[in-house]
Image 1 (cartoon, rainbow, N blue to C red):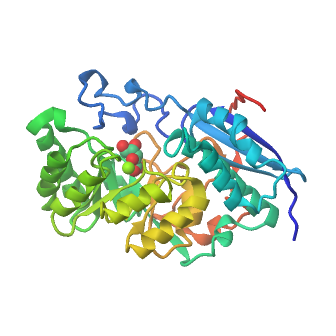
Image 2 (image 1 turned 90 degrees about the vertical axis):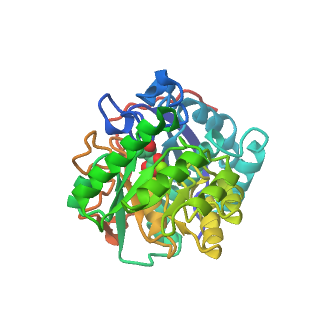
Length: 394
Ligand SMILES: C[C@H](O)[C@H](O)CC(=O)C(=O)O
Ligand SMILES: [Mg+2]
């Protein structure tokens, strides 16, 4: 079957939540004194927005085929990513068949390698790749998870990330991951406060509910080791992104240092098969957490996950909403998924990329039936009520 060729690629920016989920209003749990690599500067300790965590905003990529069918995707990247898509990447798609995603990915990656490889450029490539898979699904009238090999189970199971694992337990999630609030610059006092918060939450959720810590790259190996040892009796299931994503040697040391049974996880700020290969060959962690919108998109994630499978590692993508769900349901080594609680409290379950997507499924009782994904492409629409801006054209 010959599919219509790609006619046009467009890139837009959007502000306010959605794929740039750190772009939230005041009083949100996601910006409340969370430990970061910038916490050593007291003036940037209370709020991540103070050092610019939300400067980029959301990137929307639309790919229109000759028959008028439009695939789209959202990721983090905003205006600079829109420039890269319009001025550089679009040339590798227009006039081509949407079936040629391997060649398109290869050309996007190698043509930008001299200024790309990780970060913003790979976010832009991911956005294009996801929009391409959405288009392919729409043209073939099949959900993306069919195109990835089909479901290996009937439903997705989720853990929730947010400040209220006790609420997450009530909502039926299998675990709760909290942001760590105090980093090394807050000394022993801060470390004690961290442990007290974990102890308080453990007393609320009971012994068997998973509790995890997201350290958002804020620690060093020594602090992370001391924290892990202190948290062991409180049943901490995993310690996430404890140190800089560039410090593969530190992760390998941390994995050797943590108490038996505690898992080390990382990878949400890692990209491509080559970055993840490093994490695996150096035995840096137990679970890798690629963000589908930041690691290179679905085309690259398939390679990363095959590598992880061969290394006996689980792949539990970071956030990524529907882009993660359509992948996780197709992989045996992705036994559960993350749900980022975007309600400010967070005391309600709301769609992760609200308000940008329409029809975005949310877990019920911590689960999502595969049938919730049974729509063409990624199964979501762009909300026509959001204000989109197209800063560049080509
Ligand atoms: C809560 C974390 O600091 C971050 O905002 C989200 C994240 O890293 C995750 O969901 O994982
Ligand atoms: Mg994380």
